[in-house]
Amino acid sequence: MIREFPCVSCPMGCTLRVEFVGNDVLKVEGNRCSRGEAYAREEIADPKRVLATSVKVIGGTYPLVSVRTDRPIPRRLIPKVMEFVRSVAIPAPVRLGQIIVEDLLGTGAKLLATRAVPALPSPPSPSAPETSNENCAQTRG
Ligand code: SF4
Image 1 (cartoon, rainbow, N blue to C red):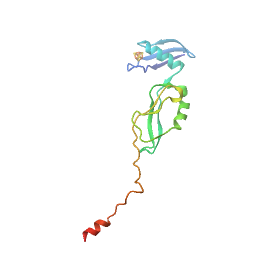
Image 2 (cartoon, rainbow, N blue to C red):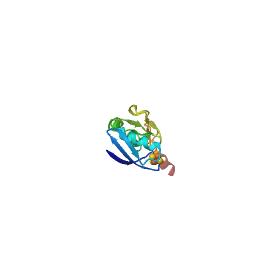
Image 3 (cartoon, rainbow, N blue to C red):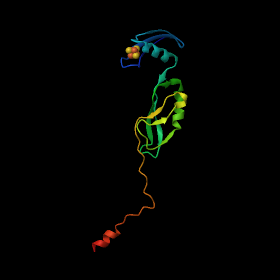
Image 4 (cartoon, rainbow, N blue to C red):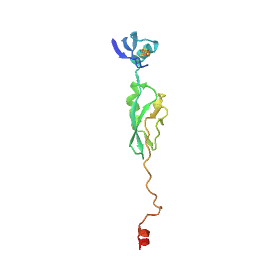
């Protein structure tokens, strides 16, 4: 079988032409360096992707925070990872770049916040004195 796809290992974006049988790569063409060949072999045998999604936020000004993995993870694990990510909820405030999950299901990838979510302002304390215009009215007369 033959597949063509771009190498994403650098901005050159060489078009790779890969001949393979099952997971065995027979020939790689179009690469300008060895990284391209390594990428082609990985893409055929066990493709990886950076995962970008969102996580629930508790008590934040937004209900969700956008997140992404700090490195590509095996594409075959993405459904299982998404199931796990849907169960995660993080308390506000959330900082930009904050580590939300340290090691995502044993992939070694960290899940990082790609935006900040401030906490909602806290409600006034019930013991705080109430403001009133009563005194103002008395001083006018
Ligand atoms: S083959 Fe090499 S030069 Fe071409 S895109 Fe991949 S890493 Fe860059």
